[in-house]
Length: 398
Image (tube, rainbow, N blue to C red; front, side, top):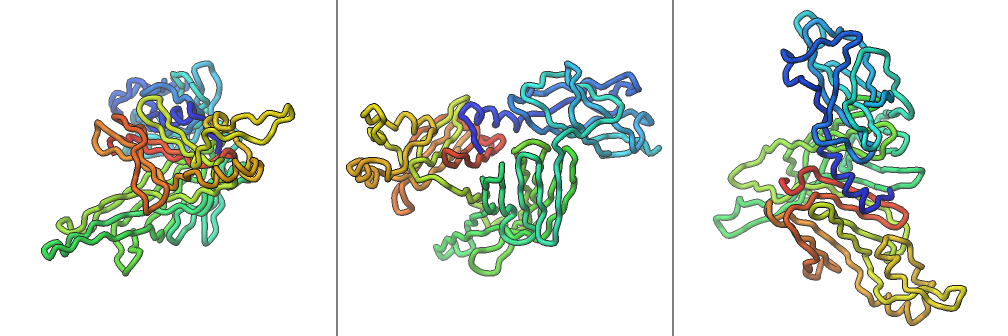
């Protein structure tokens, strides 16, 4: 998926988006909810800068909302929004005590939004869910995903506009085993996810939720540990996927130390290496971006006017530059010897400092690139035709 530097920073703001029901901190404080008395909903941290999916809960006084009642949601200027609702808790008389809601909002949808009684339309498009014995397929109208029900990968593929933007995705864990520390032996073991069960918890029309359960299985040996629950949230008409990963520590607290938990995504590349890019959000609104093989000083093929323009500025701007065979022989030789950066990592060692590093291969050392105080935690990898962005909420705290 294509994403600009500005959009990359805006995307990070979505993780902090929430809605509050005005004046409703508890069911006892909830105002009356009649036919002509809508509830005002306000953004806790400002309206999201991009179209986004959001979910929230509303408490209701006893006896005011019955099971099966329907609702509408409108913006401040009266525009209807798609809405999906479900009960979360009941009063003893059977009326709804707490209701769950979800919608998709356009960019900068200023509040307050208004929740009222009425028949709501899901809008177009809607989330479509198809389930087979082997997998669950989700289509939001913008994004198609295939979720494996069993096996090491929790995602098999992600497609947009008929083009694959993501391949297999796995959970990974690195264990520091101190069971032999008394004899001076410290062992490191790697684990990957083993999905045992997949359940569709919500099937739309606005939001679909898939729950995955499994364990982390050793790459070598038979050990299984750290049971996990993974929930994936999909919203109608959006390409964003929200992921919540929970684990249960069932190891020996004196011997088993988790060195790292993470996700591994396969991202298909269609362009030559000089047209592949990586980006990281840094501090504030800063975004660091670099092609995997920078080409400073390189000039492209001859133009109709006879000149050979520099391609480096286009490359830095994320634009496509010519394939290597289109350069003249001398330039091709220089590009062949130019460094290709193989790996990058962004590490937040403390709440007050992060560093971005890169290297050319696993046998080479890591080189410091840039640093700062608190990174917002968004990374992009792909080529000029698109790629995959992954963001971590509250990255500097995590």
